[in-house]
Image 1: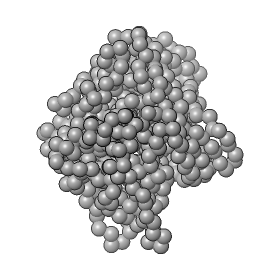
Image 2: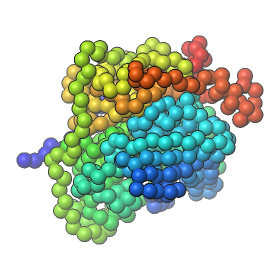
Image 3: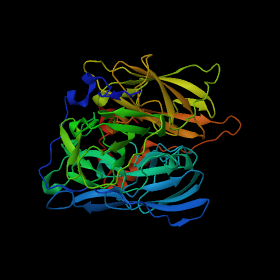
Image 4: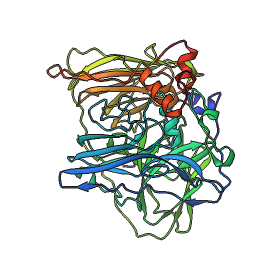
Length: 511
């Protein structure tokens, strides 16, 4: 029986970012092709059969992105983006988070199910310049492609734009036994999709490019590489794709509509593989795909595009024949029953530009907006009230959990949304129903992952609580944050301007 191949992008075309008033189209860069940078694996400080020790350093640097002057960038254990951190399921991690930046930052493990808010690394876990924060946690979730990024509200977008976005891979025995490519750097390759605008002397200027609906640039940057190519030496290639952009959606397809198979989404391997020729990712979503070059003649090049702009050229070399077939069923995933007598939680994402809000309010650091008992399984209805003809897709992200997508406006979710997810794009006028449960206590954020929207207030907080073990948390407050950043920049706090604060000021609100 022939499997169906999905040939469309699923999302509502009228809401694509191409229709934004501030849309910045991608342009093919007029620079020589260069080898795709593959982030190296971060070497543990120490490792035992039960424990792994890492040091993750946020640092400034310079990176040769274009001919001419190097670009001033930030990164983790390097000048740009990060070295890939590996978390083995069942092991306990001990991580020193070291800040060598000129201003405070946080280390958010996007998609990792850990206690909040300090281990999770949202805005309540600041690490000040020259300081180190230590965290410990046990890895207890399926193999998945996760990521690490800065999350210091309301400067998350600016710090990610500077380059603070690295990969974190969870591994487990179940995924290791599946017939996937597993040789990292050879046939198992990450693709971090971002975009930038280069100003004078090849520098980035976040303030000049600022848009409250999301900062975009005309130049695609893949793993910190401009106009990359990759030498394919195996018939099958696994690509771990992350939409790591502040705003941009990526509508992906290969030349000649070469088909590919999605095997995993945000939270790990999906129950069944799904065949595609076209795939759209919204901000922060991940998709792992397997591309089979068996019908491509060595010496030819297969190009990955977003819309009609080339992103990566795959130069196909000689390879050994690989007849590996994927099973129809890959893994079983948890699908717990909803806790009886729990009401459906309603969440509303509204507005655009400076008017963005969550449930009619802008984010306040010390306000807890919702509470859910650890272990309870609840339904959430997430609605995007933007107008269908003039709105935008809002990618809804939750910290501290992986959820299941149950329906879109009462209909089946998209074909690749049957696995665990932490981010889901919600079309204008649409309600997406998700099933949510927390395994750890803590205060967690949920927000739109157009990063300027979360900085601008489309964000709220939930406390996952255990009634038998109540806890209190020291939550960051805006005055402390503003005073610290002003001191770091050597200016009076009244002169401090953080781009995300403009959304509050224009609406007459305070964080």
